[in-house]
Image (tube, rainbow, N blue to C red; front, side, top):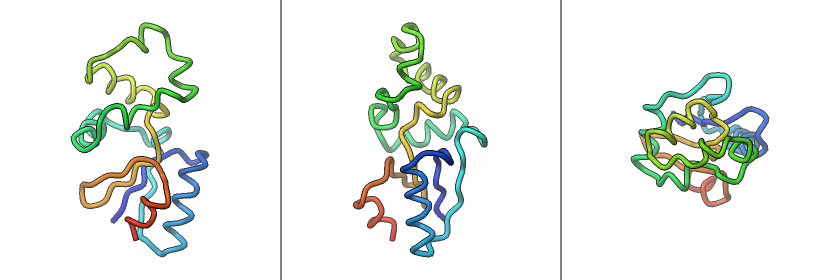
Length: 113
């Protein structure tokens, strides 16, 4: 089964949920804000994608971080930031059979069907 990690009021997450439901693709939605994430989840994803793909440095959450937090460069420190602030993670993340995609595009949608 596919697990869709996101935030319920995120436009791209809503689009992904709608598309998956329309195509009758069984999925479970995991709200990163209310259900939380573990460092293990993020490490599992980082085994497949680069930190620059997973970490959203263009969002409001990143801009609101202290300069000290933004200056973090180690993977462990950035993972801790993402656990503390799940909205730092680009979304949605689709995970199926231990493979992930980050974001929602027509190409990603087509690959999941």
